[in-house]
Image (cartoon, rainbow, N blue to C red; front, side, top):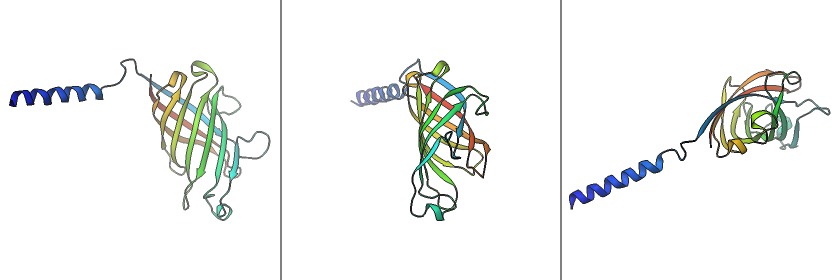
Length: 177
């Protein structure tokens, strides 16, 4: 009896180990670097729209409670006008920091050129803007990036304090089918 119990336990452990193994031997790993351009300054080229201010937003140094919708260009290099357009960051961010500028971001990187044309990745997470390096989760994807998961590291490349315009480097690390 003791040996059959031990064999049953061993079989159960082997089944658990097999279930925990990667789902596909063909899983791919992809690393991308894109530049995200947030054009806040008014006019026809703005890529950000404030859709909901909180009653306290105007009195807050951080804009606490404000909700913004974005359709930001994603380029190959840091120049908005001199780099190839790879896609658009479409989504929203909310100013969630009362005492320091921090954003909750939810967006899709929708690729419109190159090898990833027609594919997208979904990114969600906090963005404590004053940190040199921030990290957010990649929680899904479509097309080439179906079943994507991973993370991205953000570094501010350029920021204009007068207009709020910014260029941020995103280094994306993905695993996908």
